[in-house]
Image 1 (cartoon, one colour):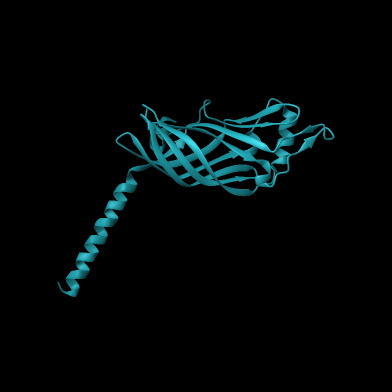
Image 2: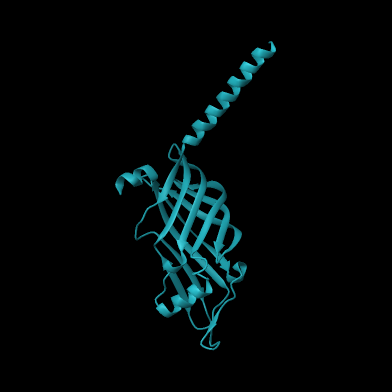
Length: 207
């Protein structure tokens, strides 16, 4: 095989590889969060006086989900953001204190960006996902590992549920105290989420 022939063969092999990669990538489709009242994120905390919960149903999120033969194969390019001031409790006065503590005027959004996802089948159409990504709160970013549940539903939507324990001080937030120190917020938080996604093309048509 002469030098010119070798170049042609190499070029053909490279083209075949690229076509194969492109074909695999086409199987990953972009899914967006469905704007629905059942979609929510909750922040649970406590103080020396009482427990409290902040809830938001207003958020933005999307990801590339690869589904083959009705099985979830991969999750890539996943992002999530929620406006800090959309988190509400049962007490307006507490909300204002929370936004001040979170520096919501300076850093209006809480964001998450996936870096890797390891998927393990748990049951029919149910998967355990070890998700590693960057969570940013009050302008401080930390890499976290979350174990979440993903389900492929009969209507081809994907539901993601889970929870994660955090500490305020991990994000350089000092647990606040109020009423001259009579009420002290504890350092530990739990974030719970229930999110459902639909293929972006189908979602666009239905809106």
